[in-house]
Amino acid sequence: NAGVTQTPKFRILKIGQSMTLQCTQDMNHNYMYWYRQDPGMGLKLIYYSVGAGITDKGEVPNGYNVSRSTTEDFPLRLELAAPSQTSVYFCASSEFPTGQVAYEQYFGPGTRLTVT
Amino acid sequence: QKEVEQDPGPLSVPEGAIVSLNCTYSNSAFQYFMWYRQYSRKGPELLMYTYSSGNKEDGRFTAQVDKSSKYISLFIRDSQPSDSATYLCAMSQGAQKLVFGQGTRLTINP
Image 1 (cartoon, rainbow over the protein chains, first blue to last red):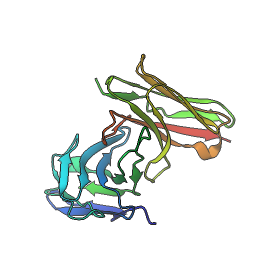
Image 2 (cartoon, rainbow over the protein chains, first blue to last red):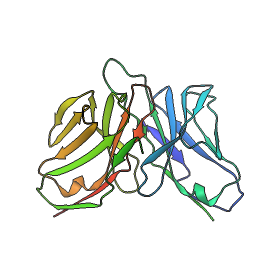
Image 3 (tube, helix red, strand yellow):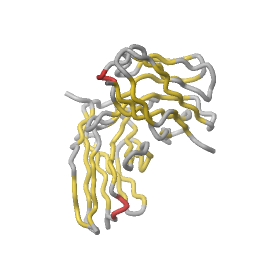
Image 4 (cartoon, one colour):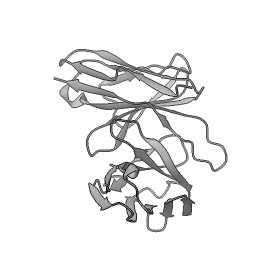
């Protein structure tokens, strides 16, 4: 299993450009998430999905959009990129918890995005 | 007030030392408490989790949760240079959304 894969690894965008960050998982997980990580700020949830066709906003959704047409893929779309969106973006997936076992979120390697 | 507070460090200790990492939180509904480890330029990986209050031990790592004080800790015994990483606490109410602390950057010096 490859786990969670993200592309691209790095990207530089000009202000106002758009792009899609790709995320794919091969573990058949129902839950998928997008986070951004800024230096010293931990992880902030952007959007999440509980299954194909179902998405919801997290803590910092402004400036982003998502879709979930399949179980495996959860792309993140940036429209009209701004310098404030310079960050490292992580995609993660998890499965339904069972009993008292906390569901583990499996993270991808991240995409480093710079907007100038 | 942030829901989860974690001292970002950085924290630097000699090899073999006992390391204590801590988080405080304000939401008394949190039930699941986790510690993730993140190596430089990598995604976080789950290190330990605890449900509700109590202790959990796994090798050199011990996780403690004190719900009455809204305080969680991670102890690392006999620390090794390979433990050098950023440690993130995370917690949830039992639904799928985790709330993360800011992360503590730890360096173990040989």
